[in-house]
Length: 391
Image: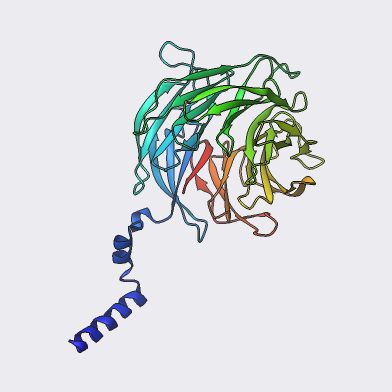
């Protein structure tokens, strides 16, 4: 009996050394099978000749390599994506201006097949405004907020336990305009997000140069204007997207029309914002006609990233709660029109979506400075405009 156990132990040792036991260990532990190796990444696109909807990739966090899995779901203009806190459901806007007889886009929910990356549509609702361009899920996973760009409003939707969306429970409208007559003739809602405490809903409106703040009740699902109801950026700056610092006390707005970033100090109790001076995302001789797109704060809280369309680059800033932002570098994105970019959960990698050149560019992140270094070959995908990691 002892000899038999000795032989079995020796065999197991050999199997571990050769890797032959790995599939069995993965099956026992519940880890991903070879076909599911790597983190899922979904890409939202503008549909047309080169794209049909949402695409899936696997991302190797050791090498930074992207492996295409193909079309995850065919759906029109899924220009921004979000995921439920439990990672079971994906939500996408359809940035269009007609939904049935309404002058509206739509919003959809999907279930996620973690093994294949395929998406199964669960529900669709009118977004209650034309050209929805951004969305966010609250921390309870029970509510979805959407920003309608041409509609100029924000809408709130209940999410069922099965991932299905109900009709909008609230539509939030604003009034006003800005000095840029071509882009700011009226409100243009461009981003929406919940604060880290899940007590407030914030929205960036490019058309009226304001960051709107609403009180949010995650139990009842109600929203109401805060007091004061908004904070302003420099006239004509055009706030586009927002990002909170991990400390929950700083909020950053990337301003599309002025190619700047505004840092706000956030009062977690009252939901009020105090603006600091803006900082440019461009070098001194930056090109005329540039516009910005995305802003992301590194999980370590020491670095802020902001993308330039026209200069085709990502500006890297060091951040300090007392001194504010300071420029570290401006790195080319290896393609044209970097619309959106995202960091992986480890904070070691950044992937940029170059819309016009139809590619994804991976960058390694310096752990000390946050500086970016190109890594690996470009991955092709038609008109990419949003990147969503599934952790």
